[in-house]
Structures are given as C-alpha cells and as structure tokens.
Image (cartoon, rainbow, N blue to C red; front, side, top):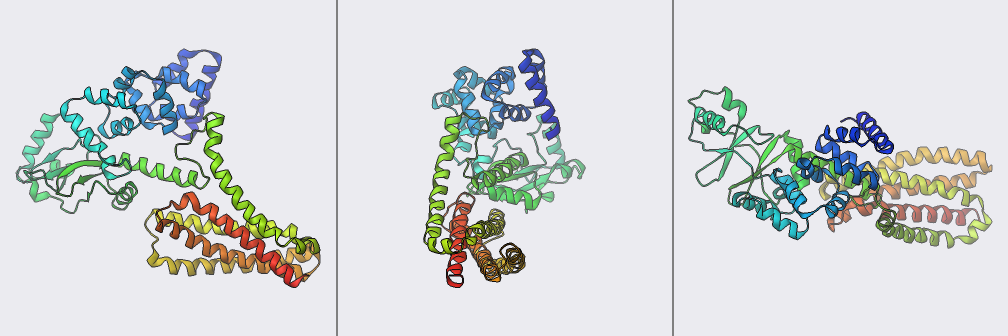
Length: 448
C-alpha cells in the first residue's frame, strides 16, 4: 500500500466511522492485509482504534498484533480475553508467534504452549531461548532439509509428496545423518538439473551459515551484502537450527531506521503517535530534563562574560549564529558517524583518517562562512573588529564540532552506549559552550 493509497483509505475509513456507517468500514478493514490493518490502527486515535479492532477478522488477529508497535499491541492485548489471545496465536508462523508470545501475559503464554503439539512447543522454546535481537530470535525452525547422497529425482518426488514449502524458500538445506549443516542446493538446480545427479554434486558449500547469537543488525548486513533470500542458522556443533528469511531482515532494517531517528530526539522506538497525554509527557520528561541541564551549562558560560556583553551588546545578537552553525556542522558529522558505525564501516582503526577528514571539511566550510558572516557583520555594525571576532569564533566552533562529532560516537560505542541516543545532546552541549566561550572570550580580549 503506497502512502497515497494509505491516506485515501484512512480518510475514507475516518469518514465512515464519523458518519456511523460501520458496515462500509468493516468491509474496508476486511479487504486489507494484516500489515495494512496494523498500519491503519497505528494511524487512528484510541477510540477509533478500539472500534476498528472489532472489525478485524479473528483469524488474522495474531498476524496484525505482530505488525503493531509494542505500545499499541500491549494496549490491545490488555483488552483481549485469554481465549481470544490463544485463538489469535493459532496458525501463526513460528518466528512471528515467538515475537507475540514475548508480550503476552504469563498465564496466556502457558495456555498457548499447552495448545500446541509437543514438536511445535519444543520448536517455539528453541526460538524463545535466544534474545529477540539475535539470529536465534529471528529464525524460524520450519526448514526443509535433504541428504547429500540422494538424487535430484528423489528430492523432486519428496517435494511433490510434501505438497507445499515454507514461505520464501529459495533453496533446501543439505545435512548429514546427524543433522549437521553441509550447505544448500537451490530450487532452480533441483528442477533443471539431471534427475540422476546426487544432491552432493550440486552442493553450495559457500552458502552463509549464521550462528544463533549473531546480532540482528549483523544478520541484516549479511543479507544486504550477499543479496540473500534466506540463510541457515547453525549451532556451535554444526547442527541446523533453523533459517532466517528476508522478510524478517526487512523488519530489522525498518526497526533500526526508526531507532536512529527516534533516539536522536530522545524518544522510544515503540512511541505511539496517538498515546495518551500523561504517558507521552512522562516518556519525554527525562530527555527534556537532560537538555535543560545542558542549557544551564551553556548559560553559565554566557553569565561568566556578563561584563563583556554589557560593553559590547552586539555580541549578544551574534551568539546564536555561532552556536547554530557549530550545532549544524556537528550534527552532520555525528549523523555520518552513527550511520557508519551501524553499517560496520567505522572502527577505531580508521578513526584517525576520518577525524582529519572532518577537520579539513570543517576548516574549508568554516573559512568560507566566516568570510560571509564577517562581511554581513561589517555591513550590519560597521566595524571590522566585531566581524573578525565572530569570524574567528565560527571557524573555531566548526573545527571543535568536527572533533566532537567524530570522537563522541566512537567513545560512546566503546562503552557500549548507543550513540544515537546520547551523541546529539553531548554535541549540542559542546558546541554551545565552546561557541559562546570563544565568541565572548575573543570579544573580551579584543573589544573591551
């Protein structure tokens, strides 16, 4: 569903709900894919959301819940009966069910496990044993494997007898008699190859094998680099545990993108746009408090130059320019560094080259914009002294912003702190304090 179609559907749904004609609204919801229903629910205020949830087909409730962000999902789960939750979990793909079960109340989880047969229960427990942001947490244990010594004709007969394949199956996993992973064989090869050839003759031993404790972002990077549709998850003893498919990786990439954007504003990944006022205010309060502390630090720097500002009032008008330019330049550097860290492109080994490069870029831009600001200042205040002070302060602050923009994300990563969450606040504090101190310090030196 494109953004334009979504907007049209959302508008039509809201009109139907507002007019009280619920039957058309119900038909609209029934025609949607579970992911579309989830997106629609997240786009509605709480009252309309509850009403639309009543229109959702019971058979797809579990699939819709998995697609929702955590806050919205938990709100709906709280309103659902235990029997309804158990029914919603039936028939779900194992990896999706594992995501849902983690958010269910313990009593409901136990009932879901009791409703499953022994084999599926064991498979679910194997997935739940791993963190949800790891390869083990992403994997689905619904795999199709074959032995290397059977012929392609035997494999084809087996597939016909089986009748269907797990979604997004592009290859079969080849294992020995002890279920140790040997490689893969593509479906294309099975269909087009000589029926008398053995599977082992067409075995792709270079197919990637992912350890279950591999971080989810590393899995996403591997899929991106190798253009994978699916990949095997293999335990330390070499046994095939399950597989990861590209649809799970797309979810990881989307979540990481949302995390980067929201974290830089101090918001949670599962922030509900239509959440109640008090919870929303509480979630944002901490970050505002941290920002206030940093603002007081910058204010204390300004206060220490009170006398200078009284003598040269023009500096007060120019202070926001220096701070703003340093903040923007530093944000550009921080954003590039955070992206590079997420993609695995930036390490301490190449940090020195990056630092020199960013300093050079800051120096180049600093000289150009210092000249521009200096010229404007001369036109504005009619004095070269003030123009020289602000030009020098801007150049120094841009250079400082480049250094902070490289060093801070790397240092935070070294201490296992998410740079996206903290780097922006630290950067703003440094650029404000350095910018104000430089401008007012140079003003006190040369203008008073």
